[in-house]
Length: 499
Ligand code: ASP
Image 1 (tube, rainbow, N blue to C red):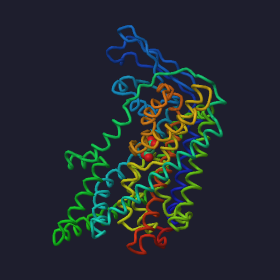
Image 2: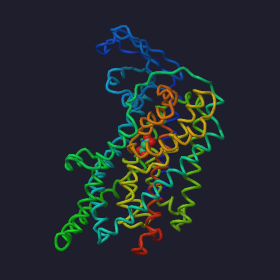
Image 3: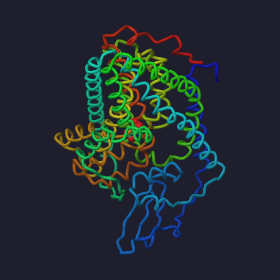
Image 4: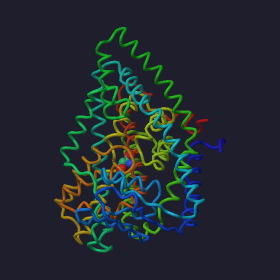
């Protein structure tokens, strides 16, 4: 594979992984499931499992006699989807995730092994993420020379984030109003209880502001809390510039050298991306049920069309006319990051590759990328914002049997924007944040159970769009940075062949 350009290698890895995974999925369709009564947590007297190809629920009778119903997921339970369940169902969830499944053991073994190997690739990316972001950001700001120059870049970046997120939401709303996926389907499907951590929008946003001021910066570094790390690194670099003189020089040299080393490590990891993507795709496709896609087909199609429109028309137009770059070339340069985002469903996890691709393959200066990308991975999520708008309108169509009125759609648009800012760059974060929007337009939160089953696939698509939008933001901001030609420049020759 090593003779081929990197993006072709990654694409091959992806297709190969998906091909093997889907074949295993079909071959492993025999299965039985069961619930381990012996492991029931205290407080639960009895639990019954109802298993159908599309939906699995547990009826639980508590010791106080209260009965509850839990949606498990709409597909096979596997290590991947059970983990999703744990995340979504608050503290008690761990105790409820007690299924065992018997399928063809060898195919499950392949799926599980692929998940572990893909996990190793993600760990490598996680390993470099924190030091890379911190050193990159400090080096980038120090490169500006004056603290004042940060102001204009910040304003442009925020403007770009808001405009593109709103464009994405409008595209999503237009598509869901046009296709109306929920009106062709069954009306008022049964509600299922999926207990999801809730919180008001203001609370979530205030938490974000609080996170920006870490009470312990070292703790934030250790926890890998991106927003805290970004803010502290920014403050550190700005004050180093303000102190100036020899101090600024030492800081610049030290972090510059550390950044170079981290970049070299990341570039080495990038070469493993074809294998990482192959294993990740294999584990996802071998564990997601195929049946469930049929019933939610129109909904998925709506999300996919809207995401495709935003990624292939809106953003490329911005790249062409605002950033003045060739969108195809730019996308090609960004392909390792985009394909890794697709297979990992995590923009935070992909961040080291996004940084490396933007700088080394797309020729955007470190000053810009080190600022726009880490911040973007945390707060600029066009794909997530779009997805939330479509999903909530779809749920509303199913629930009410008609489209939400315009005023409610405006509420959806604004809350989707804010929810996407609040969502973390990790798998399924958008699903959790959706609760806020559902509450804002008074829809039953439990109805989210209907779309949980297909969330992973849609998450993969929206995460690539999130990363693509961050990358395009770099090109746009670089174009307007008056500092030099390098920032908006040509794709370097190495772009096609990284080896
Ligand atoms: N997985 C997405 C991301 O990492 C967030 C989401 O769930 O929408 O960008």
